[in-house]
Image (cartoon, rainbow, N blue to C red; front, side, top):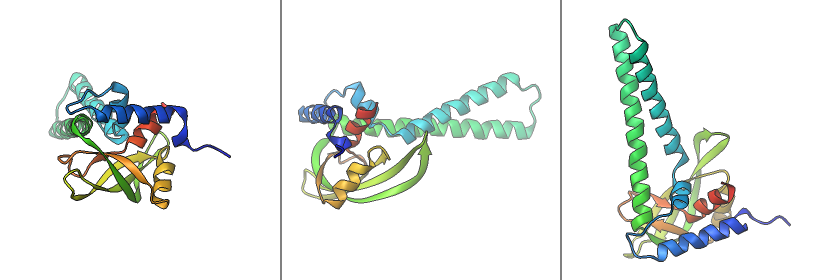
Length: 189
């Protein structure tokens, strides 16, 4: 019988490392491998797209000899879009680090898994909604994005009504981090 991906040696080691990190008092240091695997690939892709748009603007400024009104407007649109994508990527990264540095490890249940219309390098992405009881006793629904490599675990947890680990921070606007997503990304990376 085939073993489950979340039972692999590397995934189990990463889960132990995550739990050990979360036991430290906030603000806690976050190892680079954890923050790297917790990062949203969609946000990273859009940040890279923003950088490429800025490079395109720089190339246009260098090589354009005549500047018509439509060329100026096009350049302005591409420049604003590129800066906007980079700013959004940095904003998402800031919230991710706040959750890792100051969040708390809680238990939750997967209530819904929704496919997203996003595919990057052959990986499909899904939004996982988790209900958890926050440390102050309130019931919270949080969400995180996982790819098809981690999907099997979250579908299994939903079907079996299995409690899972969730890193929660009250100021993250409904965003949580699913440690198993990080562990499974580490297993593959």
